[in-house]
Length: 292
Ligand code: C5P
Image (cartoon, rainbow, N blue to C red; front, side, top):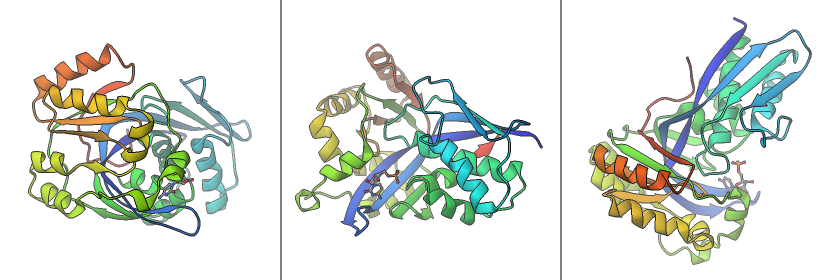
């Protein structure tokens, strides 16, 4: 095999709770994560030229070590002991960048997954997830995909009952958000409300979409939502179009709404599409990283 194409899915957080701060500056989290159908494509190809070359359809993305996909390839070669060799990575990006949708993490995950196949390295899913954690806290979930409870910094994963079928509207305001800055601004002593994670798990178990939608809550929205009031306005608008619930994903700023009715989701999509370039109508996905 000389090349492989991998699909890497975005995620949303149905809940995001921050439960503590660690010595290393990272935070202990408790999150219900959900993959969505929106995805990027990562093409990996063995080449005759030495070294790793990276290209993407977004001219403003770094194509060196500052890109998580490049870092993932270096990490793969050093961890497996396979001599670094000619490799070209092309990423076709659809997931918005710095959006709270783990687009970059999914690309890193895709590179690890794809290289494992391309070079017959036979790393187990568990080994891949451990390697992925070195790239970022969301990478292990990106490899697993579907619906999962993520604890620790995001690496302790428990697969959950899949989210029932529905329509998910994603809208990213024009601002981009830095995850370290959002965590940096969070003062745990001022966090008085936490999501009802066990209620969310029950909602998933009983496949009750309105229960799920009513339990959605993201602690980081208290930070990003204060800086960008537009986030709250988008949520209200989504509810007025019939969303069962609407919150921010990850550290933001993307807002998503959960719709039962396709027609309502489509009307809302048309409304937001005129105002925000990064507007996507998608569905929950039960797939992790996979090749075409
Ligand atoms: O791991 P990742 O690169 O996605 O994290 C980006 C930043 O977000 C970290 O440098 C850290 O500041 C913050 N973070 C955190 N606790 C987590 C995950 C991320 O404080 N569990």
